[in-house]
Image 1 (tube, rainbow, N blue to C red):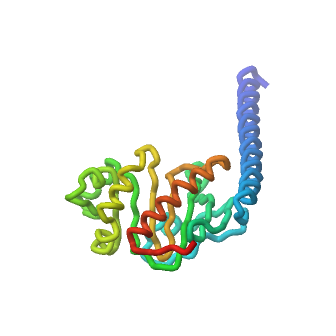
Image 2 (cartoon, helix red, strand yellow; image 1 turned 135 degrees about the vertical axis):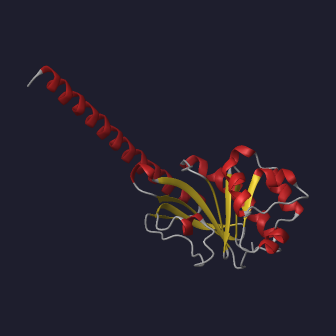
Image 3 (cartoon, rainbow, N blue to C red; image 1 turned 90 degrees about the vertical axis):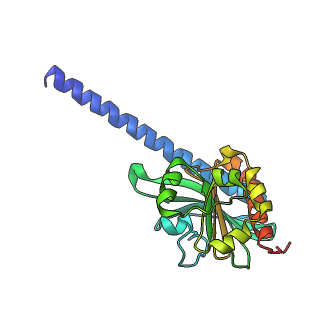
Length: 228
């Protein structure tokens, strides 16, 4: 074996070793996170379902939710319980393959009344360019700041204009811009998450406080009275 061949052999061996170490560490971290989430669920009075959950029940159309648009995906580390009159679930959702896969932590809030379907998310430059062609973004002339910050789309624009009252617009304006919440209504369920953010176990209580406040505000604007 020549010196160059020996160098290549050891180099690729080292690369494979690093990849193996990283993979083992990732698996251990994932398992520890699952254990931490299971313990947290117990302290919160939630049921930890792990990998056995199949997600919230959503209507077939319109495909507003990430869970509908990026189907099929994989649910994991799910916990469910009750909070503020909602049936609440916190779970990870993974879609895509290999290096292109994305995992993020979602919360879902379900009650008994149908909500008008919509998607609300932070607006970016690509939205502005796309809207010049599709005109899908629902803007409010009376509130340019809300319209600048958020991209809002829905199949029934009139119902969404009623739902997004000045009070609800103001509520979302007061949320810090770095939160980057995505809010989706589908059937009786609201799904709220931050793009590409898998929450740590210690972040779940704050996540639930913030997302439940959003769910409460949307339902209140819709005239829905929540039990409990």
